[in-house]
Length: 295
Image (cartoon, rainbow, N blue to C red):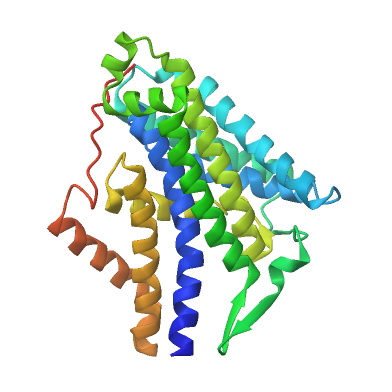
C-alpha cells in the first residue's frame, strides 16, 4: 500500500508539470488558434537563465528567470508571430517550428551542445519527510501546491480582471470581441506573457528534478503539453490541466503494472491508450467554445 501511495504522489508531482506545460500551449491556442511548438524553447531559455544567474539569492534567481522568459515570449510574439497573424494556420505552424529551431541553434552557439549542471534554488528541494512509511519530497509538495495556486490564480485573473474577461471573449469569438472594442495586440501579448510565466515556473521545477540544462530540454515537455492539450480539448484550459494529469496517470500506471520485459515499450502503450481515448471522444474530454478567426 505504501508503495502504491508513493507512486500516486510521484504521479501528482509529474502531472502538475504536465498541467503547467499544457496550460501554456492552451492559452495561446485558445486565442490565436496556434499550437506554439516554440513553447519548449521558452522552457529552455528559463533553464539557461538558471545557468547564467547562479550567484544571486534564490528569490532573485526566480524573479530573473521569470523576467527573462516573459520578455522572450513577448519578443517571440512581436517579431515572429504578429507579422503572420493573418496568414493561414499552416504558415503560423511553420513559423513556430522555425522559431524553435532558431532558438535551439542560438543556445548551442552560445552555451554549447553539452548538458550544464545547475545549482539548486534551495537545499530544501532535495530533502524529504516520511508519513506512514511513505517518503515524500518537499519538491513534489511544492510542485503540486504551486500548480494548484497558479490554476486558481489564472481562473481568478480570467474571470475578475478586465483583460482576463477580454481574453475569454476573444477565445470564444475574436471577431465579435474586436467589434466590442477588445484590442487584439494587447490580448495576444498578454496570452504570450502568461504562457512565458507558466513556462518559467514549470522550467524551475523540471530543472530542480533533473539538475541539468541542455538545448533540447524543452522537446519532451512541449510534446507532453501538445498531447495533454489534445486529450483535454484544444482551447480548453480546464481540459489542458485534466489532460496533463490524465497523461501522467496513464504513464505511471503502465510503469507500475507492465512486466519488466514490456516496460521499454511503455510509451507505445501510452500512445495506444491515448488513441483509444480519442476514438471514443475525438473532440477531447472538455470542449472549448472557441470560434477563432484570423486577426
